[in-house]
Length: 95
Image (cartoon, rainbow, N blue to C red):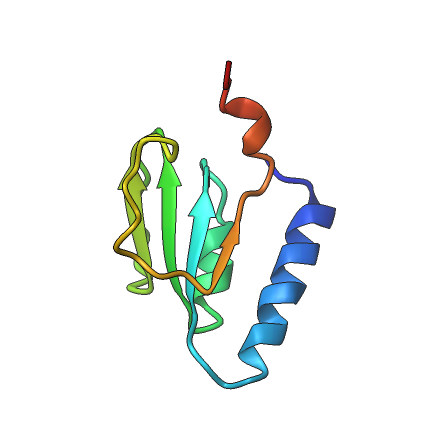
């Protein structure tokens, strides 16, 4: 789980994007059971959250959950304005 300091830093950076009054496509790698994607979606952005485990999609229509390994997920057709990973990379187990 991400620390409050990490979440605050990423949230503030994404919030600054909103100051340009645009809606961004944002990718969350390894969202886990974190509620952070909901917080970003409430800013009006479209969030895609990828994790190995099933997620309850909440009621926010700005979030798309993908169950899968983000190393093996084919996202080449997608476009993202912002990509973040809160405390995720240390868990991927690359050789």
